[in-house]
Amino acid sequence: MSKQRKVNRAQWDSERIQSLRHHLGLTQRELAETLGTRQQTISEWETGMYKPRGASATLLSIIAEQAKFSYEALPSKKTPKKP
Image (spheres, rainbow, N blue to C red):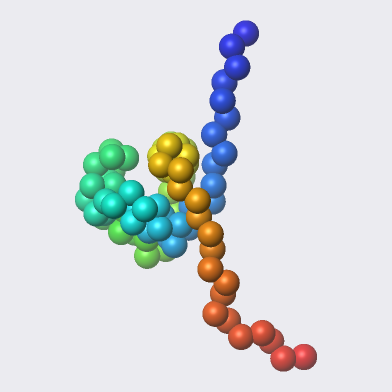
């Protein structure tokens, strides 16, 4: 029996997708071509209108892993709630 490597599927939110694209040095159109999707889809992901699902999310994870992409979320700029 051969071992299959399981890809760690990250939660792809708008900021993470845009950060990956910038890390790769790609335009929305170029990333769309890499993933086999439309530029509009990348735009919709980056604005938070939609999130990638299924094969698209898996491909993003594979591309990120190969590019040694490490996403560090910045702390939220929200002010703490007062008691």
